[in-house]
Image: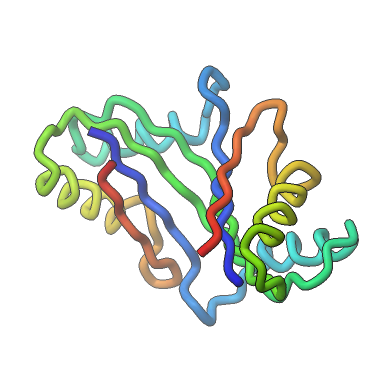
Length: 79
Length: 79
């Protein structure tokens, strides 16, 4: 079973990486980019075959390792 | 208009970051993780209101800046 985790900085947390991308896009001539936020996506290939159990396990992984829940929010999708 | 770009290393390209995550999950006691791939997600807030034009523009951004198309593949979603 495959799972995808998307980790983004929470709203209000400064995102210098996103700001750098926004700036670079402007320099390359792309107009009308009002904001950019950059996060990470983690695709997991799990042995677990039960979707509910897999989701619970992946959420535990997020809490323990994949996301810093003080400043980041995460979203789990089971594919 | 909002757009989301997901950039992943192409299949076959070694992903040391993903491997490190897989290893760390194993150390934390998470069994049955067969593979991990890590990529990045970029959320763009665009002034463009036409979905087709926005998608074309974001694809151009990917080709020029956001993805290294030699080793990375990208996916554009207009939200």
